[in-house]
Image (cartoon, rainbow, N blue to C red; front, side, top):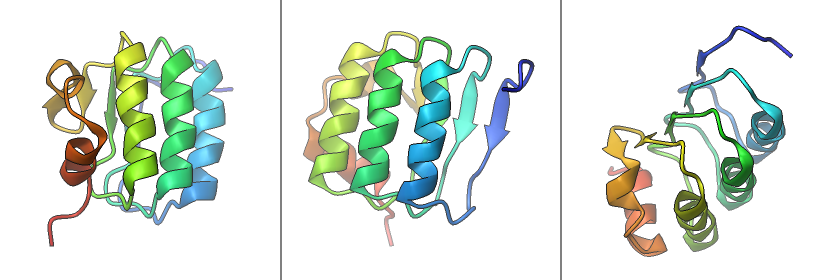
Length: 116
């Protein structure tokens, strides 16, 4: 594991659920990464659930950009639940996490999906 990496930009990288699961496994043991950009990737419900599970245990990450990913209700619900548990994450995309913790999963899904 890289011990000095604090930010990684993987936006527009065609990352799907399998890639999100791999990243989620790394985030579970992460002790240095503070920001990750996953903007505009092909992450669906399975990938969002894996990331949500990682966010529940990760205590280092402060920002994650998941804007414009293709999640449905299941992925949004998992992320909404993770936001209620994670106390170190302060930014989800350009939004303050504190304001998102009160959203239901449908509202969160609408914020994260593409607006085309």
